[in-house]
Length: 420
Ligand SMILES: Nc1nc2c(ncn2[C@@H]2O[C@H](COP(=O)(O)OP(=O)(O)OP(=O)(O)O)[C@@H](O)[C@H]2O)c(=O)[nH]1
Ligand SMILES: [Mg+2]
Image (tube, rainbow, N blue to C red):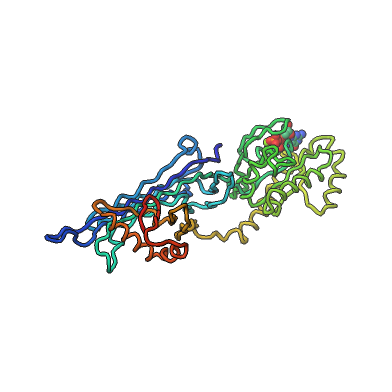
């Protein structure tokens, strides 16, 4: 079972704005009519019922969305790119990670229809019609489209089981799963037989629930020892836990407490899930002999336990009936209130600017301004005048003057350099 994928996504870039003028008889430049560029497409990760694994993302690791088209004359707006939808199974968690290895959560796509924009498409650039003013009727500048966002994302699918079986290796989790459902997990007398969560459907009369073996849980699992770290996240989705301890252990009560401590260290919500304790292997003579002592110890802790033999099936129907009873109280309680479909929206990008002095030049860094470019046929004087005009419009002029810029000083912004 494949339940994790790491991919690269790149949203579409915005189309460039156009520098264009209406053609009119005897007027060298009719009014400006350069259209805006179209927006680049977003990359959206969406949970869909028709998808049941992340397997498809194992081979293709890199995704690009369509770019927006450039604007044209006659105010023709460039076509927007169509969003690229990456379908994943419900229960997928999307995280993104930066180069320094920090992960942060983008979204938890719990149900079908939940979606998140994993990479935002670039905005289209403004055509020259946006740069007119009362004093400048023939702007020769336009704006390039923004680059599409590029990200590395990780998608992880959480199993959605109602009930998880936890416990040390060899406790008999697989044996119980096999006894209670049609599942046929591998059973063997050595630890770590099960290396991936195994699922089965338990039927009781007309009612069913999904039971999952959460394998590999040992001390230090929360720090990545054993396999526990890999799988504890699956347990987070379950509503209740069957905590299995082996009756032939030196101290079943200690085992139980140590596993609970692991849960606590991994995630508090896991530790707070209702647990049903199942002491296993009561068919063994050695367990029978000390069963009274074990029962006393457990009742001393106030915990109600089921005493079972997963191998012979003794006590298993009673255990499952009890599980179903607790499950029903959980399902009809607060957990039932399903929120409506969630759509995660990324933060809008920052605009704004900074001015710094680099040697003789004043350098303006401003995402929106840096994308301004000069159209063909513009004279340097035109450009200088128009750019300076834009700077004052955006309030950059004041900041430049404060920084000491005087007429004739060199200003640089993106690829353009001109005189103040
Ligand atoms: N006598 C007896 N043996 C059992 C019982 N339940 C499980 N076993 C044995 O205990 C061993 C481990 O059982 P599994 O079901 O593989 O245990 P597990 O908890 O799934 O172990 P891992 O997957 O390795 O973590 C096997 O040899 C089983 O046959 C039981 O009720 N009685
Ligand atoms: Mg197992």
